[in-house]
Length: 296
Image (tube, rainbow, N blue to C red; front, side):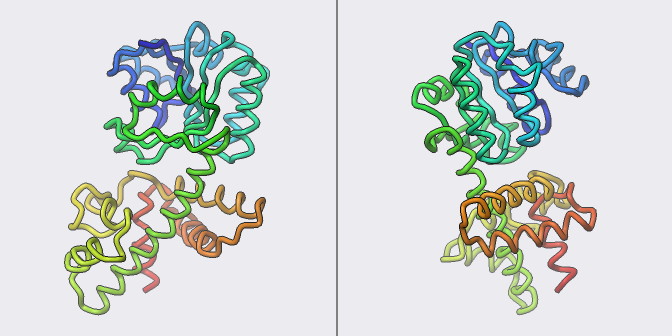
């Protein structure tokens, strides 16, 4: 088993670190929240005194941080982990950040004699807890080969998307599509309500017809058809509105930088911006149906 440093123990990082422990890895953790470290300590993790301490005397490091600025600070700051780690350490950043930052930090790691991949995830908190995440991995062949067995302790699908930054590119494209399809799925159910079509009937038909999509069959935004969906627990996340909005903004930033036309992506971002502005950023993103119902 591998000795692993883990930095960032939030809603996703915490359960990911627990799954590493379950698989027998020795895990050294750090988070600004002492409570989060305490929780992991009760599962057998070792508490580090700092991010730099978390990467000392380990073979691999996983980071799960809020945004690109945090990733740059943790990796390249004055007390950054690239200066504290031993040569040859494998770094895996599972944060969802902009492609440019992912590429820059990977380049810095390689210059320091490290292997690194950007490995954002899909699946939300439930998949993090059950070890069923999908990892979209950017990096060289050697770094991916080293990262794959560790990521398999936390996920079911580990996909090599391409060179450094490709993991983030895949994540931003995937989540833009997810945000768009969730809104469309909500609109379909609201129209069905107006037409007098039972929600279960729409689900039974659309889930077996050309309207089938993940937002419908795995995360249905109305109560009933999919018992495990947040709609059945008053839209408690899950994957929050704020997280979806962050990803849609990253997609629009990338679209502007590359000149890609994404009118539906832009509209989806505007819809989620309005929902967050109404104080609902902590709801599951499928709860967007509530705003559409009010506008109906």
